[in-house]
Length: 147
Image 1 (cartoon, helix red, strand yellow):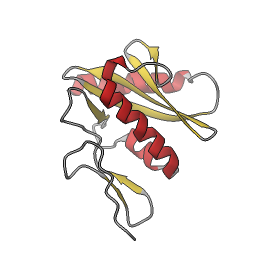
Image 2: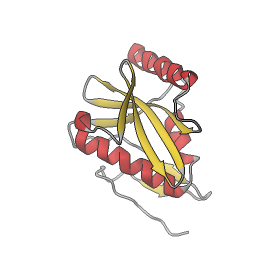
Image 3: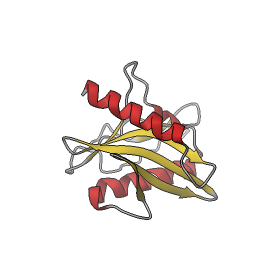
């Protein structure tokens, strides 16, 4: 298998690498060189549910998701529709379309200029489910309590 390093404004050790078992290993999504950083929520046991969600998607969808991450990284709080929408309280959603599929990555802005990615979903209906919003709120509260 050919090794492919996809550089995305990251330090040398932070990149996407095709894994030996045919899926992308997303090593980091922390971008330290600009004002804002994009960070995966990590629960108390060390799991990163948004990263796991992304790795389960087709390669083309991963590319679209990373493209929208890049826009959030570049434009920060000024990024708006069609890429970002307010969900509830401090929770926002990245809006991603790939082919006929629609994805949402729920996140919030945290002190220290960090966007914390809380929950990822592949949308089946026009409206976000309350259970998805509640899970994002729960993870946000957990993150705020621990950091």
